[in-house]
Length: 548
Image (cartoon, rainbow, N blue to C red; front, side, top):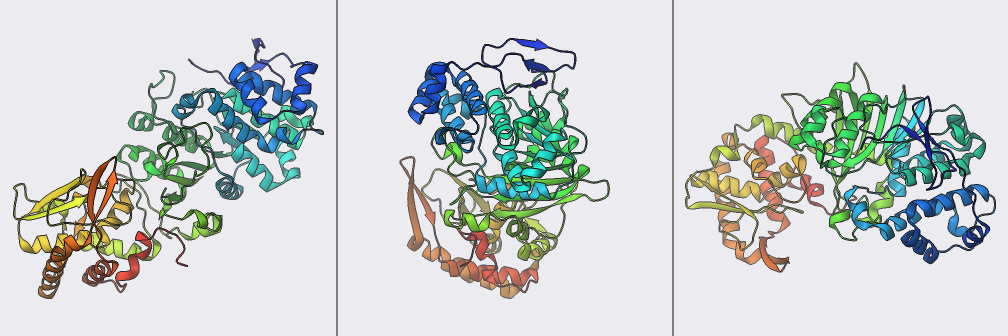
């Protein structure tokens, strides 16, 4: 059902009648009069009473009374109803009301530290109006307003340049109420709060605006007829990418956190192309093991790894006619105890290479490459005349390589079929090609290739097939090295077998000593003409960010 551009009053209740007016917006006309019995209850409100009210009276009705009570008693509030608790309380309320609805809506709540980093980047962006698209209860916009301070916030609101957008009218009311109570009820009417389907083409961002956003991450099950059927929408069928496209097109600058799949995923090519046509910026991407950007934000969703395992990216885009392309960080992996130190805007910017990647028909994916390894990557790709696909035999041969297709910290190759449910098995035609490919997969290069273009869970066969193979650069001495090394590793495979149980099924893998991998790295780097040694990939495999 199409949703019109709606502006919510602070004072509506769940039984209010809606009246359309000439501006084409909709206003709630009634002000809640809180009965004395309910007011007394709210003065001594607690979590048990709140959850009971949500379960019996619904989330919207409960929050209508809470918001009105907070407005009426803003200078004498019980600690439980302090506005700083509202985001958490709303999530708990969602959990009490409908977990499945929350999961399907694709909501991932932005932690405080991430919101601060995004706000710091937004503060550097150009734009007079400030918009939070998919604002929810306001974590992002409230963090940004805290950052710029009380006086600048009042100036922003008073000038009519603060905009909030969401399809959840309860969350939107909570956001507006919090801002109004914190920065002044006298200017609350200047807040532009738009209850809407953001993909409706009638919903427009204001001119000269900058946007901060954490959009919904759910797949689009049904494309609405009234939406603009852009190539990005039709290619991806994802809410987050469709929000990204519309925001990028209409805003002057943007800071947005989304899944990282748009960086290299094939179906997101049209989005990447649009980004580069519009301007420039950077993308910082994060792994989800062992630490996760959204960790600790589990109220209202299934409390499982599946619901909280998004690999996220923060994208900053600035519109420009002259400057194009994006600096893209490697996939950042961190431990939870490193989180406070890592989530620093200046430090994260240091992960970005200096070069800007421009997406077009000749280069269709962003590459997540460490700054110190960029030259190695360029040499590897430019000098290699073969790919894995070129040396695969269509028939079974005596030269078999079995590769576990789940990657966490390394890739391995085995000369026999491993006892596991997921692997890639390939055959090559001759001993020379076998020795080199077997060693290369047991080096850092195959794993790094996967991290550059994927890095989720499994290794796509098509991605492995596309990996460059510098067979054309091998000297007789190199061939001897790879023959000797392959024979050594093949002989020792059984010594380094590890078995883990996944869903009740034992899964074999091989974990060779780190020095074996570094020795192969060292040889391949020399073949490519790099002065780096085999330890240069240490961070690619590490389970932490900081070496100390």
